[in-house]
Length: 356
Length: 282
Image 1 (cartoon, rainbow over the protein chains, first blue to last red):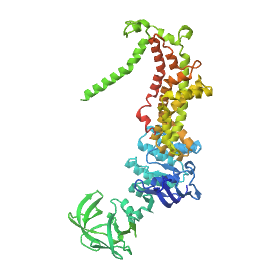
Image 2: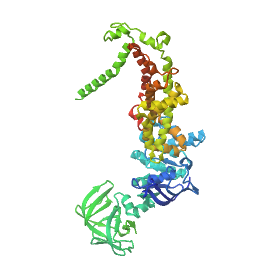
Image 3: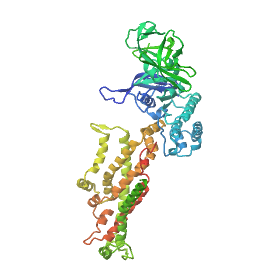
Image 4: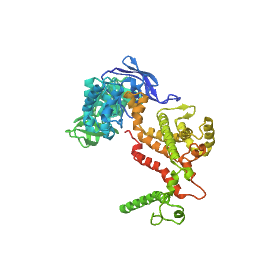
């Protein structure tokens, strides 16, 4: 177990090109020992590259990697003592489930009795105890993925377990249970878990810390609450939350007031900028339905009300802007006009897509 | 409609089966005939239409002094040369193919694909182009008319097949399996031998089948590079021919020489299905 530090890391897959495209732009990041992280971002944003740099499958074009004080940048994968689980199950098809789970320990020459104890323990956690003597090749896709996961879990001393969208092929119910299991494992063994996903719910429910990436850059790192309430960029606001954050072009009319078209809204942010690229962002969860006008309220035309069972989603239009508001299911929504309030304390102001 | 489709399907399968089996039946019946039965018009049923005789078969096993050709020596020579050359080709070809599939090579403008093509290009040349270089090469090594010389030449001929098949096979094996083995604590050699290789047996069997077929049926190089000390089966069989074509013993020889290939094909056949070749690991 170790603290993992990425020091000015950058990586390109075309080092000899004149204008190389960087899959990972220069960044520094540290992962606390025993932390539970999610690496979140759209496909192709550099998540997997970052994992591969940590596990040593990819050597970064720039920068250094440290496990605690020890520099491991040029250390080969097998010496790093790290576990990695890939998106699709990777099993050793010619071996039994037991041999698959025992393989990482056998490679590291653990004593036989210790291997057996650990394999049985992990098999029990993953509900694989009945299949130990079966050939791994004949199992279902999710059982195979459990084996991949199990091979990561048998070693207690790993620096970290890196998981690259490991639950993609697993059915939803088992997914939920496995995520909880992973949390338990993290609590019990204090193993650093780094979980790559493009599913925000998965990230939010799994991790203490979420690192959001976009186009090879870390755009925000923080707790699920930070990411939800104060997205640092419009990308995070848009990417996290369902539905995405409402974002509108606006202009500053005074220090604590912005206007969208002719309508003025009070905000808590001190705006000292005359930039013409200002945006107002507000989560649909914070927009309320009012019975009469007050500060920061507007009258919008209801386009659609969708009932999601536990909440209703109102889609309304105001001055050709679309507003989405998530409200309690019990609430009666007028069918034509609705008064919506954008509370000042939940309004985020972005200049050039960055939070002020 | 579905009934018609089924009927046509089976009709063509039966037709094809007859097409494949007929030459064998023809050869089997001919091998038990003598000169008169062969030249006296088409006959098919033994005892009824012609009197079966073992003359055709006995020629194959009688020594030259008794008018036979004794194929036993050449038969085992052929088996030995084909198996040894195929085995070495598979071992070298698999290693080369793995390297070509997993690592990037670059020497000037030459890259992985060019190296793979170089291997395959050995098979594009007509054999006659290679005959003189091979002859000079073996004669300077003192390996003309020897089993070792033939094995050497066959490795050159068979390895491209092995490389070609195995590069394709390894390209379909996900890289993650090697990477997982590295993460689990193997070095690259252990990853190859402990994890990748055991999973590549189907590919190697298929490559082996092709090597064995191409090695076994070669007549040209066996004819040019051997004289009296060492003889392979195809050369010996051709030596049967004389002014009167001995169809009976030629048929017997053809059956004897095709038998090992049929046995090998039956063993390897189940690995030839698509499922075994692609995605053998996932």
